[in-house]
Image (cartoon, rainbow, N blue to C red; front, side, top):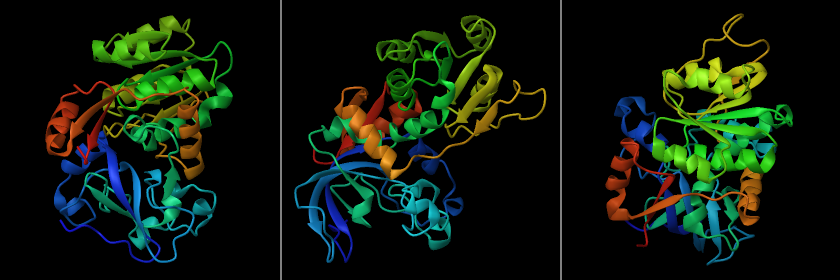
Length: 329
């Protein structure tokens, strides 16, 4: 493919790292006619790079500056975008605005065009390879957890279902931001080991005995917050079954599960929500947590020619943490 050129208002990045995500597999498995955008598509909605060129009218950045890409692009003008919540832009769909790697050309290439400098966040002295995944795998759980923090008081419990790419970061965020006891669930002993290594207080196999295990650990009361980073029917059923009174249940994963909500189906006053990505200001906050040493990503690296291998490992559940593609080698 030809090297892209920065048009007016655009920024050209030389990509240093691009994260691999289950969302990419969801795109791959969707029939072409149902995608809503044209193929071929360059994947990569987690991107880090250095500024290679500035389009006409762009200010505030310098060539060579290290940055990460804020992925959920919006119109920049609606009420949500005015708050930095471009992940909830009310006009993006109507205007055909799509995130890089999920409709617009993404970061799994040597160069990437960014539509507006506001979609770049300075990386400073942070390692781009170690931190590129924070643009989604860090930002998404941070956004979900931040809403639940008022209920995570001393003596409370938080359940993390899925200790993979997002889940192992969510565990660290919960430990850094709340006094809650963190209980991690997964089907993989290796991922439960990673969960313990990054701070989980308790681990439970995500099987038919999981609900009993969590209820036992919470003295029968259930958890005050539950974060399902798988989102499949079995995990959603676990998520709602372990939720306690007035609990916050966030279904984050794209596994196609649906929660049963209604009187008698959940603990009293429990709420279920489906958050999406996070705001630009929240991405800055996540990077500040990384800079303070409060959160880190367990990373496996691959050259760009090895990207299919990375996806094969991810699909098979063998990536322990987050896979990162290095387009520059």
